[in-house]
Each structure stands twice: as structure tokens, then as C-alpha cells.
Length: 489
RNA sequence: GGUACCGUGGCCGAGUGGCUAGGCGGAGGUCUGCAAAACCUUAUACAGCGGUUCGAAUCCGCUCGGUACCUCCA
Image (cartoon, rainbow, N blue to C red; front, side, top):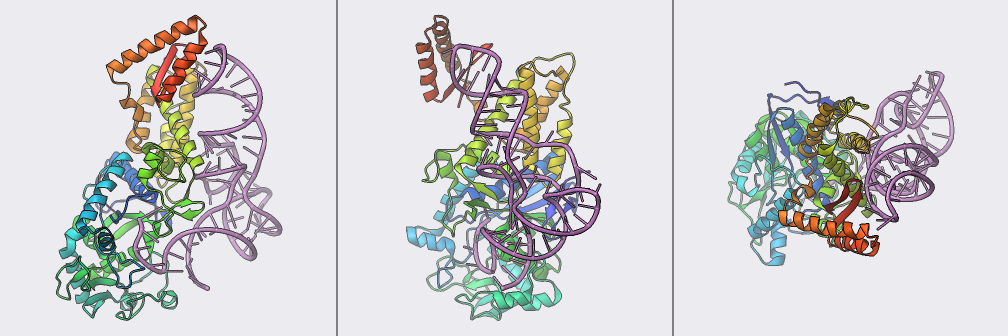
């Protein structure tokens, strides 16, 4: 299988030609959400970024297994003295079962992801469903001598590990600096070094999510689930591991360490990290409490939103920036994205009705190569979109009789646009589903003919009232040379 | 304090040595009863200072400003 796809590998800090370990198979693991709250705009970024990669790899002919986990245990809360589980904390506050929280937010996450038109992962494992696998990994790391027990908890011995391997190879950190710079946190007296991390944590009596283990009644450490589940479903070494840049350290760094300590070699060939979405230049995140949930975007129910934005507008907005750049959110930017998306789709709608000429005045086929080139250059979707806009302009020119295309080129446009807009960028034509109702079609035909009569009688007041009233209902009327056309907004 | 990244026109955002990015917004025009859409034309740019080069937004250095990670975080 040949391809020219280059992806930026965080491990080497360079763009590298993508060569799977065992073509045509590709194994891809992406860090999913911790389901203790609604998904916000930041969660949409990796989901969409790696959805694009998933779609493109499949398009190139690879057989991809895409694993995205659901974190439903572990992950300590920083302000809880006892190291209380995040899910548990939420559960206690709302007085419900932890798994009830997990179910509730998992469902909502899935709904949001469907709204954003991301393809479902091949496997979506939960941490709580893989306690045994995680314990097996702890045992192995213990056997290999890279972990120690302390008060019923098991910690990873970073210093010892670093003597044979390199702790910091992904994030560029040096262990000596970690010694000096790691902040003092509660509950660290059990550890030999402040940067050692838990593989297994003993549950205190109030902790309600716990499992029996050889060491204590407890729960698995922060970074273990991805290592254990990645290995189980993709093997000890797999092609791609993705996630947000904020997971680079310590999460992904520790995953590498765990894999080496357990299996003796690196787990992943290509590490990919998407950048953050910012608000006024600052990261949108849970801890800063400046996040806007996806539901709030879709309904417009957040004080800093001027109105609602459709899921496809959010998707398009995210795709208009490169995944490794920060993306600054604002109403203005979203409105611009919405108009741009609309412009693209309007052009797409014109394609079937374009009139063919005997010759073409523009070279539309060259745009396909340009788009592939952009995709191959580390998934440069903003570049792809820029090319598509240029094609949209050509379509409009042909529609206006200012440029010419032969039938073959028009047919080419249909498949080309279809491939890039819908198959690869994963955009959905929300309007395509509207207007299928025969009753509505007939109704609109009737209304528009009444309006046409009014116009012919120069009764513009009536004509404009019809148009204005329909606009309020979300129906847009455009008078063209071929008569009035309508569409749902 | 350590590590990494960034600073592009009113806004968002590509571009890494010479060729118009693109979208939104602004101005003027064509079309139209008006509007919308579309098309045409147009203005506004590469944080600052030095250096390398025939030539730099793009490479190097310094300065200033910002962000991320170092603690759960997409």
C-alpha cells in the first residue's frame, strides 16, 4: 500500500512518512473522555481530529482499528485531600451510584459525537471493564523491578526506570529537573520520589469504587488504563496514539514508561497531539471553568454565546484550523465559519444543475491533487478547505455563465466534492434532508406562485410580506432568473 | 524556576526563502421592484531590532509580548 501521508510525530518532533507496522492494518488509540461532565468544545477537537485521520486512513485503503477509551475510574482530584476518585466525588455530590454518572455522561457524550458526525470507534473500552488487565500489568512491572509497594499502594519507580530507559523522551523533560521542580502535593509521603506515579492505589474506607487485588482493596492508577487496553486491543506495539497536548505529560510519558517496564519496548510508533481551543487566548478547560459545552453551543444556552450554532458549524470551525495550532473561539469566528460552510454547500447544491459546455475554461481536476497534497501534509484541513472554496467559486462562475466546464468535469466535481466534503471532512449537508416532504413541496409551490402573482401585479408589499414571514419560519426565499427558490435555513 | 510552542491585515486562520492562501467583515460595481445569493474590482499584513542572503513573514541572534505543560485536564 503506497501513500504519501506525512504525520507529525511528537516523539521525533518532525513530520514523518506514515508507514504502518503491519500494512494494510493500522492500529490507532485515542484518549477519550473522563465521563464526569458534559463534553465541551475542547473535547470536540481530538474527536474530530482523529475522526479525520480515521476517515482518511480508511479512504487510503487501510484496515483501521480505532480504539477510544472511556475513563470511568481513577484520576485523582487535586483539591481532594484523600485523593478521591473524580467519578466518586461527583456521585457523592449528586447522591447517585458512580456507574449511574458514568452511564449518563457516556450517553450524552455519544449523542454529542454523533451530532458532530464523528464515526464510531471500532472499540470503545472502559477502564472499569479492564481492572484485571490493569492488575496484570502492575504485576509485570513489579516482577521486572520497576515498581514498589508502599502502604498497600504500588508506585512506579521513575528513577530506577530512567537508569535503563529514558523517562522524558516524549515530553522533553529531564528527570533532574523533575526532582527540583515538581510541586509538593498531599499524600506523597508514601512515594520514594515526588514524580513517582501510582499504578495501584489503596482505597480509603470512604472510597466506594474499589476492587480486590493482591496488594489492597483499591483502584488502578491514572495512566494504566490506556497502556493495558491499548495492549489488549492493538498489541504491545501499535501505530498511532493520539490525544490532547495537555496529556503529553505526564499521561503519555508515563504510558511509554509503563509499556517499557512491562514489555521491554516502546508501545507506539507515532504519537499525535492536537492543540487546545482557547477563549480570549486562554485554554478552554474544566479547571479554568471557562468552558462551553457542546449542548450549549447547539442550543445557544450560554451567556457568552450570541445564539445557537449547528453541530456542523462547530465541526467546520474546528477543521478551518490546523489541529496542531491553538484555535481561538469567538462568536465572530463561529459566524464566519457558518457563512463559509453555507457558501461551500450552496455551491455543492448547484453542481447537479450546471450546464455543460463543449470546452472547459478552467482546470478543475488539478484541485483534487492539491487537496490530497494538503491531506498528506499532516492533515492540513484548512488548506483543503481553502482549495474547496476556490472550486466553489468556479462552480458559481459556471452557474453565472462566466466560466465553462464540459460534462466530464462536472461529473468529476460531483465525486470530488462528495469525497472531500462528506467522506473525508465528514461534513453533513443538513439541508439535504429537508424538502423531501411532498406536502411541503406542494405547499411552497403554492405560496410562491401566489407571491409571483403579487409581484406581477406590482403588489410588492404582499410579496415582501410573504418573504419576510417565511424568513421568520426559517425558510429563505431567493429570486433568481429561473424564478423563486426556497431553502430551509 | 524548568521545558515547549506561538506572535500574520478589523476578526478567524494557512503559508517556512522569490509565485494571490482561504473564509468572515469593510469599500465600490454588475444583476434585482427591493432583498438575498452570486460574480467583478479594491483596501488593510507578516511584534520590534539586528544579522545571513541577489532576495526573508519564512533562516539565525537578541528584545518585547502571549500561551501550554510541569497537578486532574481533550
